[in-house]
Length: 317
Image 1 (spheres, rainbow, N blue to C red):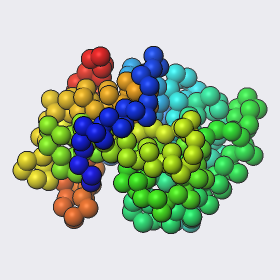
Image 2 (tube, rainbow, N blue to C red; image 1 turned 120 degrees about the vertical axis):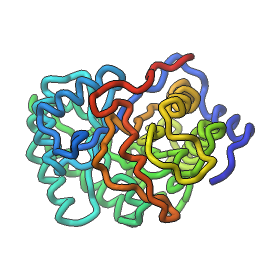
Image 3 (cartoon, rainbow, N blue to C red; image 1 turned 180 degrees about the horizontal axis):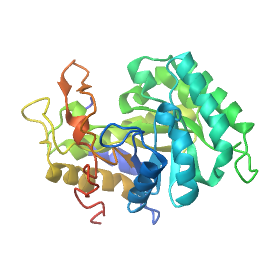
Image 4 (tube, rainbow, N blue to C red; image 1 turned 180 degrees about the vertical axis):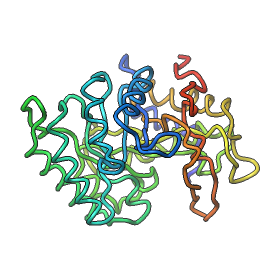
């Protein structure tokens, strides 16, 4: 990581003029609930209702896993206030085929207005699942697929954004240009926790990482109006740390990152999708780049398992 400096933060802010248009807040939602059980339509209904209290969009990971799109479709028709970024898992051929089949089957049962866009892959470049060119091919393939699908009212999905999501440092790496060039939008994932940041530096780190990725993306796409947002960010409120001096995994620290980092991005008109809606106590351990494991992803919800909000999601501007 390049250490954040006052100069780098100034460069970030120079990319944006303060606008009356505050960025919108979204949230990542898993296809399974807090018990690890696949979400039913009732469970999706509850999740959408809880999300609607604070978020304008939800972001998902795989439309076929847990019959996600099949189960959320009826709920979306009842909860019209929240749009969905439809995640598409592309790693192996069988899974990718199941994703395309789910889109073809269930997109016609919902309104196009319920769909914010289609996210092909989630950190596929970071994990090395696909080359940039192979990811670009799948982005173009999904764009072609949806152009032949109409919603429940006969409106074509053609023109709905198709893009991808990856870690901030992968977007700084210019070798991933083909994926950016193929996309209608790009989302940036940035987590100070996984960079072992201290409490004092975590918000500076978040803003600096986003600035570096944004400048690189815009230099490749060559369009200041190209849609770039934050795909995942936030801080855990429990679990064990990776180092002794990094920010503590507490509710107070997560709230500090929200107020000082996420709200700064929102104030400059950048849309932010937080990670994640609800704690997942049964989730597998997560692994850092150096091989260190942690249970923190079980404690990353803005809601706990009983849907009690852990801290305020209103920015103190």
